[in-house]
Length: 483
Image 1 (cartoon, one colour):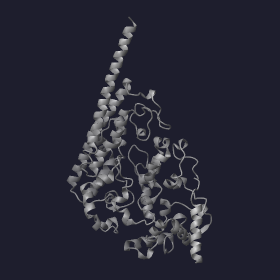
Image 2 (cartoon, rainbow, N blue to C red):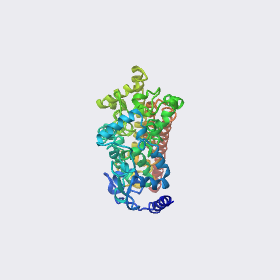
Image 3 (tube, rainbow, N blue to C red):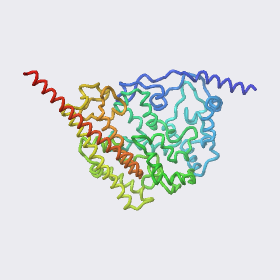
Image 4 (cartoon, rainbow, N blue to C red):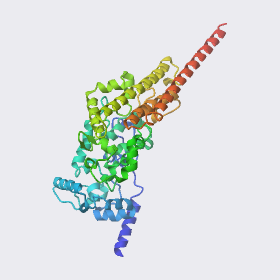
């Protein structure tokens, strides 16, 4: 009976003192625009390497069995997940996991019986933890103390990037810093842009793919593990994959596949996100960006509009990108012929050229309205974009900041159409083609792109007619006044 009351008492103590804790280490932002924003409490969890500090209560030094005793009452789900995990059951591992465990034990220089709370939330191998001072949110670096190869592969993403972007973009390993580099992210209410943080937190948290506290490799091999982030109007990867023939085969037959096998041994009869994006020259790894070519729509369908460089020229003039294309061919030929693979990807590039022409024409239309002084409203007659967004007209017309901020005609309706045209529709034509989703690159994206193009041209004609009428009316007034 005494043990029961100790359990209840500890649970009540944690329940009282673990709630309502004030935010800590949240006095200033970080990154190139850090002076313009302050973090909110939840960002301690999206970017723990930057903002997390232990709660003030409960105070005390605890051992692992005391951690589970308290949290079994407060958070029974997470304790149950851990109790059923490989970490808690090192005596029940599959053969390949036993090999991995032997490698980990060799690196650590000691035998392991289980991996407990303190190993992940404190220090690997520690037997006790000062809750008020030492409690930590697990980071890739901490996971890497045991999972050295996986961590090194993940970190190696920082060596790759899209030409003309900052080093490491785009990569999971620099995902949160990519937020910090965006001026509008710094300007907007952090309660809104934490939606960006939830996905971009992958830089700081392995549990973006390996759900805590089970951390099942079998789960992270399934396409659904990617869908939380890779969905939506700007990158509907899971939707386009799921509705493709590849996805149809997975949905029909995937329940029969052995997800406990490593990717190299799985031999799925249809590709998954992981089997395509983790594969590189005969091996699978946690570096998923070595074949990355696009960089969202920002490079091909926005930055290059100002340079007049169409997608096929941009890709073919880059030795690095063409090398990555060859790496993609190696993926495709596991199921398709080399000729089909090249023909299909060439067609994807040429379709991007068609997209680029419409985007370029749309921007030229808006730029001409600006130069004629008839954009409604003109930049000088509307609120400035929020700091630190720079006023760079005409290049700012229809810029990305309008995705998350609007006020009194900034951005104008025609610019908003252009923003969604390049940021969503243009890129989704290519996304639909890349994921072999026929509706994805026709009615869902191409058709919507054409609608915005027509709306932009129509709005431009209306603004010009209105300007002509106003000019005619002004001449008539001047003529009447001079009589």
